[in-house]
Amino acid sequence: MPETVTPKTAAQEEASPFTRRVKIGIAGALSGMALGMLDSYIVATALPSIAADLGGPGAMTWIVTAYALAIAASTQVWGKLSDQFDRKAMFLLSVAVFLAGSTLCGLAPTMGALIGFRALQGIGAGGLLVGAMAMVQVLVPPKESTRISSWTGLLLGLSLVGGPLAGGFLTDALGWRWIFYVNVPFGLLCLAGTIVGVRVPPRTGKARIDYAGTVLLVAAVVSLTLVTSWAGTRYPWGSPVILGLCAVAAAALTAFVFVERRCPEPLVPFRMFRTRNFALAQVLGFAFNVTMVATVTFLPLYFQNARGVPPSLSGLLLIPMTAGMVAVMHLSSAYIRRTGRYRILPIAGSACVVAGMAGVCFLGPDTDPLLASLVGLPLGAGLGCLIQNTILIIRLSVEPRDLGAALGMGSLTRTLGSGMGAALFGSLYVGALARGGPAPAAVADGLHAVAAGTLAVAALALAAACLVREIPLSKPA
Image (cartoon, rainbow, N blue to C red):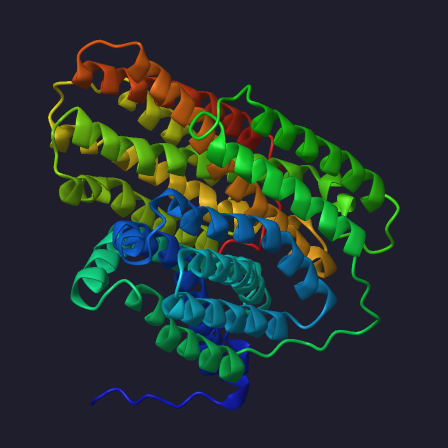
């Protein structure tokens, strides 16, 4: 006889964390996260076309810098606002700001206007990333949130590979303005999914906004981001501009610590850092983005300049890394849901990154490109173990009232890891090229210098992972 399926009762539906409504809400949150991830990779390929149309090629890099500055400066603010006010409302507001910035970017008549609108878009993107993570953590229990984190790994992989391809296609077929207009329909779907599927408890109590702390943190983060963007490229490390920015960052951070310790509702609650796991999670997140920028930036340069691989194909050689990251994120998610344990995963992930970067040190000017691309497998596996477990550790380390601020700090730490990694490794890479020698050999030497720096950071992450204290999520299934 055919098997009969009994419809679930309302009580059974509510007992499952993934009800139809929750799935719609998760889809809305992930759509917003995808918008923030894809934008940087899509826009980068259109920069030459934008400069040719609007002029001002000297200001072209500011299209990227303004967006990155705005994300770095706004992430912590959005996270704290989501703690103070309604998380759903703050996320919807960030989507609206992002869509407004995207539309205005597409309509921009001048390069200056485009840069300003990119900053507005970046402010919205800062809220997209931290707001989506905060809502997911509220919608499902910790054990099931790892499943969602594994989906974000898939989104990141698609962004790395598909973003430049989509940007190039849209620019060639429809014009560069459509790389911004395309955000609108997806953003509207994100708004609809969030409105229908997300229900969060109302906030109680009076909100207190830390204006002084916000200004000081923004000043410090903007200064540090400019240092990591300009030092060693636009200006020498010892130039007055770079030294001045470092002085501003140091003064702002000192004043920020002084203000936050006396603020009744600080932008960054320092009580979070009293929990060892939370502090260690910042080290793991920093190491994750340092490794990402080293791999995604300098491996393609090696493929192109040392092995003669066309730029259109060099990105495809990162597919082993992307596949390894996505696969391991799904496997580790299943492991956590089955056992309720996670501590071994960041340890294994950091060890894989160490092994992968050690393999990069052996790539030479005559290594076969396909063979060289296989070093991405342990790197991707390591990154897949690190990212979602870092977010899980942060969630379990703080009180619910600090969740937004904690996730914002984690996102800020990763952003600074990207910027500082790019600045340091860029200097190491350029220094190796400046020492001369045959071009392919010099490029390989530059890659080895980057790998050595990443190895040091990965070793620090491995030590931090070993110190994490595990809080079992539940008994094994």
